Image (tube, rainbow, N blue to C red; front, side, top):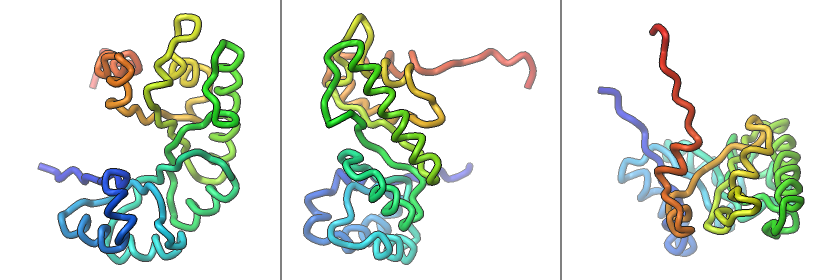
Length: 186
């Protein structure tokens, strides 16, 4: 049976990373993880992070960022690390929409950010929290985002804990996003 590589979301270890980021990465590698999703560089440069990950044979699955704030800087940092995926929220001025026009503006903004990242070799994944599961005109804000953006520019990282926190059944929500076809031949 083929071994499936498993990575670790470093946000889980953020308090330990703040004290000893490199030592924490060393322990993650020693445990046997194949890769990590970063949640900060903890005063290291992007080049230093890449060097540490390479030395430990840890793959960089992605970079979780608090928001795009300075998009050009985010792109530069990710490119310096060889990171091709970034996760995070993507709201104009960090504000959640309150009406249909706001949802459309959010989607258009995310699409522009994702397109620029894509042109620079990085896939944007929108990471939800519970607030994206408020409804506007009978649609979740998350659905507005996913349905009104180009899927080549904006993908989703569905955080099931936050979906549950919002009072939505995570399994049912994820199933609503999946298209399953019956094969006519294999």
